[in-house]
Image (tube, rainbow, N blue to C red; front, side):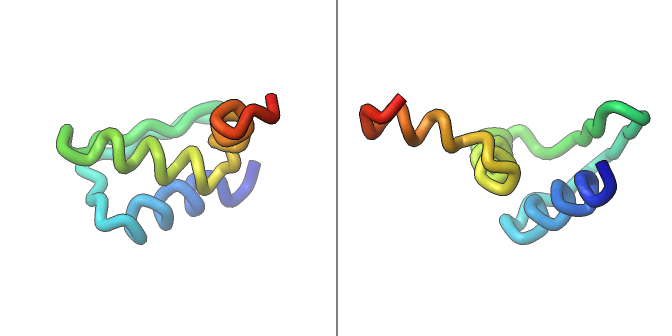
Length: 63
């Protein structure tokens, strides 16, 4: 899907998370960040890609 890597990198940058190393293939994107930012990065990426919607529904008792 075009733009996925750009969206990932932009999201991390907007959250002040520096990427130390990047590896990509035709089906995945991996990057190395500082351990201190793992939770912040995961939360930001889940939100950016709409992956937290199910979690929000469960918290609100909708799912």
